[in-house]
Image (cartoon, rainbow, N blue to C red; front, side, top):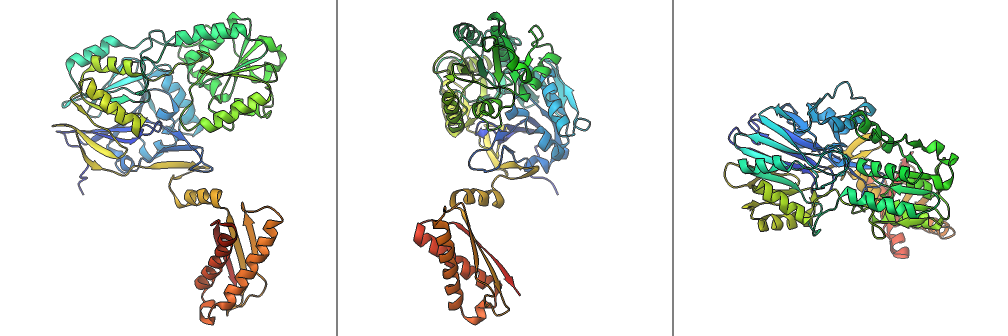
Length: 555
């Protein structure tokens, strides 16, 4: 049967399955001449809405069903929200992977952990390189961001050129890696650009995002003013910041330690590709305690308050090798990612209780964003001059604001994409032509399950409502052989719990006595009557509606 959504030779399609209407989980598809090209395949992290879930990713059902037509995956850079889902989802896609050298080094480690290093082959594209992937001609344009080797992807077909920016900013002094290739962007714009798919993260921020060079100068001054032990929390992937901290430590006679496995992995990948090679050796967390407090500066994972990260374990006095004490300092050289406010505030409070001074970007100039503010967005639109603007990498409010901003920058057409919205870019005006399945998968232990699965929804309800469990043993006529056994989970403390258990058992006995004999012989009827009796009593007494389950054994 012919696939009605197979892209024709006379059209170019765009389909986001992740990252539109949210920050994270980027998955974007381009369709032309019977084939699809994927740009990025990332993850996000779980929150209170998915208890027990650490990792969330886009559901690739649409393209997994068409995997034979997937020409390849191009990865713009090595951040988790752009490459993190590859080890989990590649087995469903089994297509070629394309990345620059540093991104390939980071991804190879992830694939090795998943046992896929022999199967999932990565084709390395040099910076500013070109490659043909199916019917798509690909060119990379160097940008700046908070990680080495960020790239915009130019996707050329006979219907026009599309610029997919990935994550970017305009940093005149990025410190690690080259500056943005303005000449290539201008030349692209002069040749005509059909559409630009662009980062929306900081569309509400006026001015510019700032330079890494300014952060280095500020940290150099700040660390010089501080005594005792210093811990700096930053993203492991922000290798310019890692280099800055190492150089600041050296300038002030301190040994620089890396605390957290992801930092070591990132530094190893960087040094494989010629970055961070002129620094003194880093100290391991095992050796931190051998140095005087005033001679140590630690780079730590966990600036977002992640439960198992180095900073959180240090703040809770659970780290086996590293500790902070009164008079020490913790510098948070990172932004607060929306949704992490509670965990970060908890971490700040835990450190403060230890007597540690907490310093954030509200106190000192210790961080700049890796995403473009409004002046940078305006500059990019001025250089590229696309016919169509499609903002991505933002929540709904970011994308809507970016649409208005693009129109103010004289872009003729601007649409607000949503995950699952199939958009025809050419021929004719850009328009939505269909909606396809889009959702989220959650990593539940070792299994990938829909994030809205009944099991996870039930787990969420349990965390809020608690559980009543009633166990019954009855004869063939439905007469109890022993009194009902009742247990309560997450509802009451003693002695109230004991009193409630006895009262519910009595309520259950009364409900069973009142049932007609014929209904007591039906397992489903009997269990439902008991369930309702127990739940009604608890709601009437405590104004709560716990999940109520009945285990019925008939002998």
